[in-house]
Image 1 (spheres, helix red, strand yellow):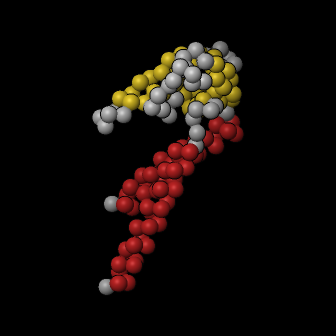
Image 2 (cartoon, one colour):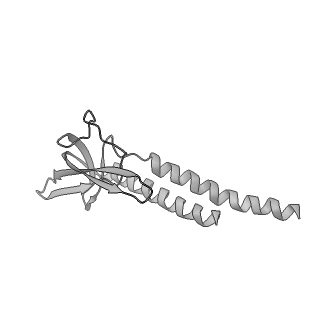
Image 3 (spheres, rainbow, N blue to C red):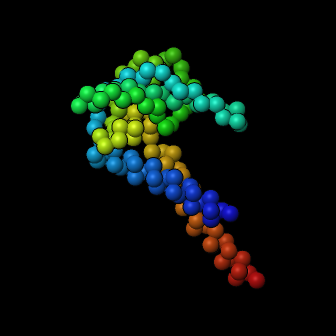
Length: 134
């Protein structure tokens, strides 16, 4: 079971890191405005606020998408409250793939990658030790 969980975590982490690398290398940076926050409530009682950024591409296409990362609160003094101007880096081929500079980070993706790697490497090591102890 830990091996399966490790594969899933590693998959999510690597996917997120590859996505971030593509945005760093081929992404376009524009000014956007936070127009609202999507509120997502989960069964565990957790509520996360995902900022929705709106911008226009250089060719005139309007874009309005919710960040994939949410936070537990958005205070009035927060620099990501509704109406705030922010920098967005997006993929010109698919503007739904974007990051809000200063909000989105690769920290979660790195954590998933590390945990997945530890679980994947640790499971065979534990099994080998148990096998040798027999």
